[in-house]
Length: 162
Image (cartoon, rainbow, N blue to C red; front, side):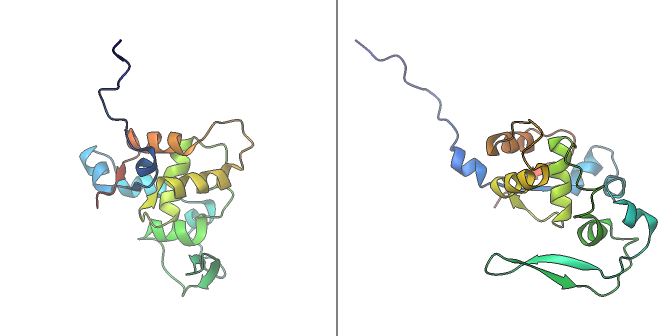
């Protein structure tokens, strides 16, 4: 008797998918006829929108051993660099880190808070779970995060090709 349950297509390697890196592609906004600058400025927290520099601007920096330390920054004019404003002033602000935001928006804000540097799906998943604290009833898995990033048509998420 022949076994007719053989798969004819290879399933994607889930482990490899979870280690893919993503960032937001500013060129996607140009191709879509949208403003990258406006997308960034729309995400600024209240403190950054007010134009006031924080009393002691600091940036979280991950150390070689994996710990986080805060680095004091020189006074900076954020008016022409909304990503720096998001990193330095907004990344921990309650009005920026609203846990009730949709998953796509949270992923977008996480990437911006990281300076739009590429992050793996697993790293983003861990950050999402810290953000939402797991108590809102949503089912968020690493696979869901990968799927949201890979089929995006609204935010310009792009996989980094090595």
